[in-house]
Image (tube, rainbow, N blue to C red; front, side, top):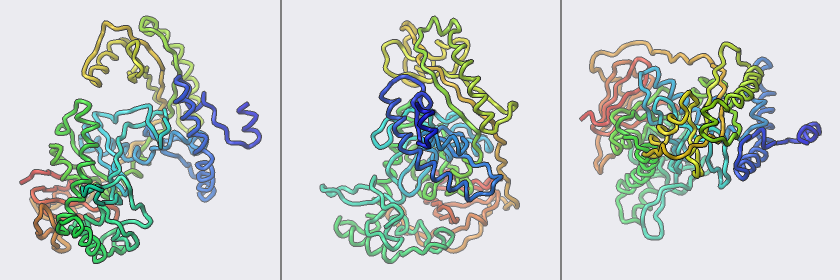
Length: 494
């Protein structure tokens, strides 16, 4: 039936192709979401492809961290729903590898939301989420999102308490400082506090209106019985509290100590809040990569070709250990190799990784366990790591076999920047401006990211400006520039 409909030119989504595993409601919901999104995605990608040179290879990022061809994305668009945040996490893996850090918390703050992810050697993965109330079951990087971004609207609630987000001003009308918005946002608060420099916003190409912002801050402050500075700092503090909770969800609530990780921040607004967030979490190192506002794009360029497959098997522990899973994997692997070949991968650059969704009999959820000789022992250990306990005496079931097929791309070469600063030398200072922090106003060095050389040391308070982002160093923090141009911040340098 699907072939007949496709022959008529109709967009068709078949559940056995989109989600070949059990749980019929999730399978149906995921297929419906794919059917809804795919025609729009297909039109967009066709128009984009028509505008590119004929020899261009067009790929699309997936939620799981790899890319697929545009043709596959047109048919299986549901796999791309969280692709933007996944690009940033993929880039973080590359940067972490280059600077010797494999335990990272990524902090991506943009205009509408903040996305955080924990990397303990590799990013955590999941196979299900909820999008606008609809269950979606497809492999994806486990990214936790909160509605706290630069455009998040701040307003008192009925009880007079200050609330920030999840409602956002978006790009239109945008924050008050953009000249059209009328409701205060986190961006407005940062501008009022002196942490965003109007002349350098978007490289000076986008005008901001600080006087308009100041009037709006003063008006709301009077309503709340606060000084304008107290209100602006309160807006920032409320937004940062939401970010802190998000990081604790992916770390503390899963048995990790944030202090054992470095915080890698990106997005246009990530650097404005990273040091304060690190302090509240006990994180000892903050990394601000080059071009943080474009960081997700770097991840997309660095991504491998990835195809994910699944098949429900529902067998008992004894059968799984006896090798019955092997035939299921072999059938999937034959298909995967053919698909990777169509995606442009060469045989010598293919990697196939096997996983099995395991559970204790009677559980309604599974854990994706790497396939190996002692599958049950691996599951018990993973269950204890994830939930804090294991029950080896309980029967174990293998529910679904999964295969991740990867066509390895060339690893991105992160270029070292030229020049070298003298020991302890400060970077060139464009100017000194007042910033507000902790209820006090103090002069801060304003530095251009383009002028930072390896070895430069910059103590806070300071603001680092660049076209795609702004980084704020509060008093007591200090930054040093490494050979790749990353800004490495000690939040408690003293």
